[in-house]
Image 1 (tube, rainbow, N blue to C red):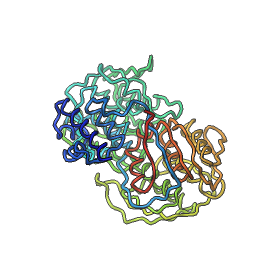
Image 2: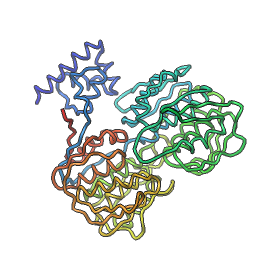
Image 3: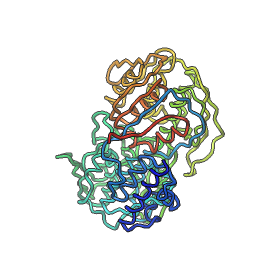
Amino acid sequence: MADYKGRIGNLIRDARKHRGLTQHQLADLLGTSQSAINRIEKGHQNLSLEMLARIGAALDSEIVALGAGPTHLRVDGPTTLSGSIDVKTSKNAGVALLCASLLNKGRTTLRKVARIEEVNRLLEVLNSLGVATRWLNADNDLEIVPPPHLDLSQIDEGAARRTRSVIMFLGPLLHRTEEFELPYAGGCNLGTRTVEPHMTALRPFGLEVKATDGAYHARVNRAIEPERPIVLTERGDTVTENALMAAALHPGTTVIRNASSNYMVQDLCFYLQKLGVDVQGIGTTTLRVTGRSSIDVDVDYAPAEDPIEAMSLLAAAIVTKSSITIRRVPIEFLEIELATLEEMGFRYDRSEEYDALNGETRLVDITTHPSELHAPLDKIHPMPFPGLNIDNLPFFAVIAAVADGQTLLHDWVYENRAIYFTELNKLGAQVKLLDPHRVLVEGPTHFSGAEIVCPPALRPAVVLLIAMLASKGRSVLRSTYVIHRGYEDLAERLNELGANIETFRDI
């Protein structure tokens, strides 16, 4: 093994020198330390497949990159988890803040950014527009410096089509130019989504969008400004974020009603305040924004921790009947979920509250205890904040599968997502699809291993991985790119808690 790692280290060293890079420069590209690169090149460092792939991409070296095929996960169970784990910062806040950085002519430094595929795609799009970005260190601090003028003609269409988040460029870009195009947004396959709610938010700023031949064609009429409160037709997170970003560079006062008050919207509001924008009503459904005609400041901001990742870890502990400590849980965005779990018999301890790095979000540490769960008396359904989070509903499918009795889940937001919950049946669950929005889950379940292709939706894919942790025998989850869109090193971090998950490719 040591000789094998030494040969890999020599290949990396030779590829680095061929590129004319120092160890320090390669470390900067990878967001790690020079000492780590030195250990790698000497064969003294264990390397994950993901790190090897990242090194290969940084060095443009096919010798190091391990093929172009999809990555898969091999899970041996059942698993009992133990130990402690920190919740990482929010995926959805991170992508919103990347889009919002376009409002600022100065330097934005974001702390502990989730280093996930969704972020990588957005960085590729930003770089193609002329924005300079660089990872500063192994803590995933990210520096963003926009150019004086964005070159929208050079937008990376391939990267843009692989993320739905690019739709949040509409808000900041309408202040940059009077006419532009954005490729159609991609992302999870959860059913038809329309740009119309975004237009309700942005038309008052003079933006009109026509969707033709695979692109959004946008035109801005500078003579049009908000004359009355903007009433959003749906309390959507990205819609609210687009309205906020449009209002940030409008020097008047904009009132946004029926606004989302979800976690990523609050993080965006706190960031806008750092830019000098006056935002009132944070955490409510009415936001009052007094913008600035120009923003040019050097700003440093730390997005808060991800309540959806926290729920993922809670579900993994519950389903495997494990005792673990989950640190840095954003409690105000999980209170309904925890209250629902308590009604089902879940037992846990929580610490006193403390502040996140942004100085605003309340965090706790939660220690889970093995619990015998029963089905809730009422159905489980999501609601806008402060209700049960829409993205947390899927985790109740696998939790309900280990609870005694029948649980009705109503996923009213997406017309296709509930269908993916039936994939749990391949592992031994009893999930009955009642219609495109409702499933009936019968428990308790004794999971057994199976081979399953990842569904094209992020949270249902992670739900399957959690069920595999509790499954007897070997399971395989194929084509896991969708998980990497929203989670950083999830398999490796679960392994640190005692899971047995191996990443592999068909080479």
